[in-house]
Amino acid sequence: MKFNPVLHGLRGLAALLVLLYHWRGNFPALANHHKTVSFLGTEWAPFFFIDYGWVGVHWFFVLSGYLLAATIWNRPLTRRDVVQFWQRRFMRIYPAVWVQLAISIVATYAFLGSFQFLEARQLLGNFLLWLAPLPGGVDMYNGVWWTLPVELLFYLLLPLLLLCQRRWGLWPIVVMALLVSLGWRAGVAQQHAGEDLQRYAYLLKAFPGMLFLFVAGLSINRWADSAHQAMRHALLPAVLIYVALLWLLDANKDVLKTGGLLLITWDLLAGLSIALVIATLIQPGKGARWLGSTVLVRLGDWSYGIYLWHFPVLRWLPKLLPMRWNTVEGSAGALGLCLVITLLLAVASHEWVEKPALAWLARRQRAPRGPLGQTAQNPSLPPPQLP
Picture 1 (tube, rainbow, N blue to C red):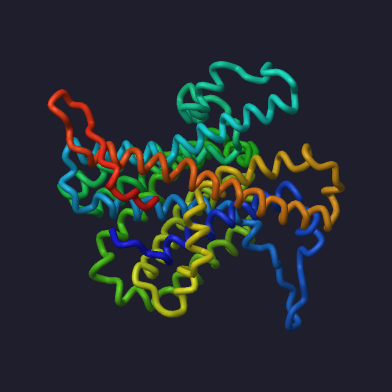
Picture 2 (picture 1 turned 60 degrees about the vertical axis):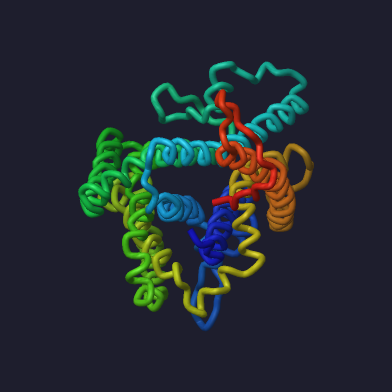
């Protein structure tokens, strides 16, 4: 698959959006002080997109659906193809998580002076990313890890989805995914009717409830070659549809607590609009090429590390530095510190964990096998790009 710097930059923006959303929640003074600003005789909400920065996760899911399906779309999907695909995806996720888990345990020990906070079952569950709401799943150590089991389940299912697509066509797969996601989300809403559904958001966003977003991204591959010339002119309408959906949710905030049809369908509609935006960027016009700038492409390289590290950094700041974080200045300072520390950790994760892990796996997968099955190493093979 040809590298697309615009989509890579979009991944970096999605990670940054999630970071800003969690900063807004943990250090709200600056955003609360500037809830609205006057411009051209109209009141504007400068933090509107940050308030809905959690939608950055939706961008990750749809991008994963498109990009990962593209890597094996035309492959024969033999047993070897499928196993190697799973190996690459697991190696993409787990090593960086394990390193963060080890560092977090050491840092927590430094604060508490003992390991009494560790519980064997929870530690093992986080090590394996067997997290709630998976059956028997444990509570997560890092609040953003909930998306990783969702991604991993999609990786496991993707080869089967593509095999079904080849046999029955794309539309049955799309309809199946839509029905699964709608049925799951409706079931959760019905089961907890009358309760504050914000407490059960993790259930709504479990893998069945988000399956349609991945399949919406996967579907882009079906028309990527034939329709890209027409789609490149649809970027503005696609973005307007996405923004309109954000405004619709903002005007109906009560559904986040009370439920209703909009709560059941909004994530799926958002995924569809995001897929439309991504489809227009496969062959981007001049107005979108800024997304492929050097800065944003580098952010795309570091996006996984940014996503993993920003949340614990935000939680550690008040413990490490005794400042007045509830002031406008403290909030702004927290943002600056979080950006700097997170980027340093993300770069370290990318250079010292993620790239070496995938390069090691690539050498093992490409090296010829000896007579007894041993892998003969070939150090001349280039390291793979991180998808």
